[in-house]
Image (tube, rainbow, N blue to C red):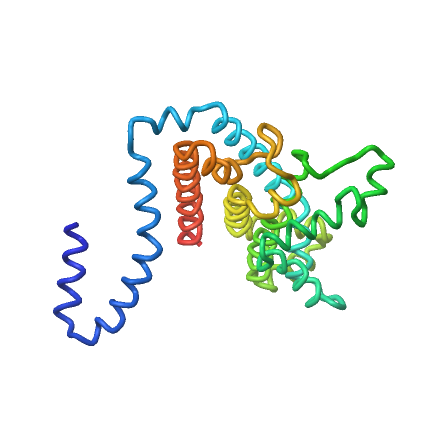
Length: 270
């Protein structure tokens, strides 16, 4: 409160024109912060830990952690070489490929879920081929991982691509002069120098995967212990137990804050 008071005193001493910037800024900050504050205040009660440790809440938490970690691992393993190619190579239709990769970030969640269902559902584009080898994806835990990867992996690719692109081209040329092949160049020069960007991208991807809802509920359904992640349990909690929904919401907010703080710290070090 003392710091806030000093802030307003400083603004008042600088003149009334500064309020033209401060007033709209405070209105937006209030719009962003007030709902989070209200949620936390509502969660402060005797039943919070009872709701947070309920079987349904723990099941949703466990499933969210497992599937989101797998999704991040997939994004890192397959997204890192893709980001490297986009950042350092020149090839035809590169701009279109970048557009395709970024598209899931801006798609409405319902569109993403429907697209996944049409592609991998039983009657979808690849559904019959998957059925022939006894693979069914919708309403399974694998569908949760696919949905999370679809919406979250582009964030990792974007961050990694920026990290690789910022590396001085002279370092790459020097490594080639020393006789380094493509793999040695990537492993010993590019990967270490872009490390912070890769970690930051992985954290953002994990945060997005933990909060994924729309594509998951359309493609994977809402089956407790199988596909019911924390966001889906929160949605169901409005009908069954609002206490569990609030407890899970506060837990998600807490995890997101921690992950974002880690990202900010990495950015400042960079």
